[in-house]
Picture (cartoon, rainbow, N blue to C red):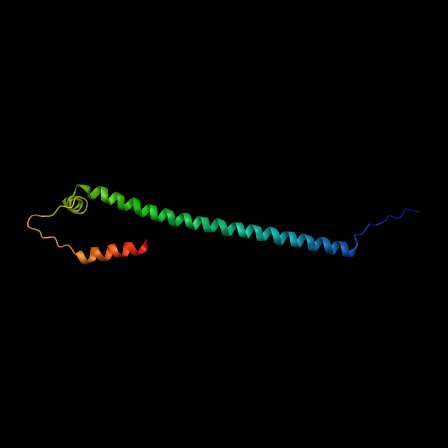
Length: 109
């Protein structure tokens, strides 16, 4: 007679518990991965906007450098930075505007 082999079967409750545990573990891993992906996408979007603003600044600076030899640029610098005016040019100063500005500054303190 041949020896009968004993078949070791896992109880149904244990198998069901193991399947549920694996499923829950997969859900937690998936959620963590999804959360990390969202965070990285937000960082990428933020970096892209920074790159776009820096690119605009670089283009504006390059245009200003190219135009620095023009007479218009020299006039702009003379008027804004040095406070120069053309001959026979009249400058009007609005004292009311300055007074309102100083009152507003005092209120914010």
